[in-house]
Length: 106
Image 1 (cartoon, rainbow, N blue to C red):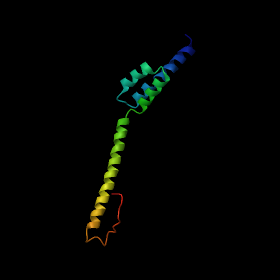
Image 2 (cartoon, rainbow, N blue to C red):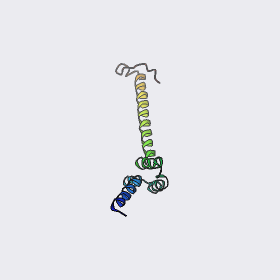
Image 3 (cartoon, rainbow, N blue to C red):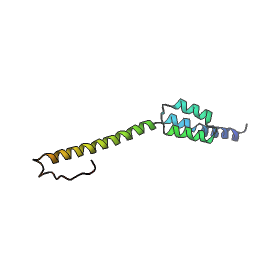
């Protein structure tokens, strides 16, 4: 074989196994699954792109749970703030100090 063909074979193999390399570099817990998926279905462009996306975004479950927690925290903070404001407004001794506004959102 000529040097050109050897270099071409190395370049193609490097590109073909790029999703596996990305998964190893990102320390994905699904390295074996991604490697097997890439080996079996990477020959098709769709399979290779799917393996690459899986390797790059392996922790989507963690991202979704963190976003849900943030959303719940902000909702709880808003509700608690509203409860505290209404409690302060009901207190007759503080009625003159704390301005009370009618709220139609609760």
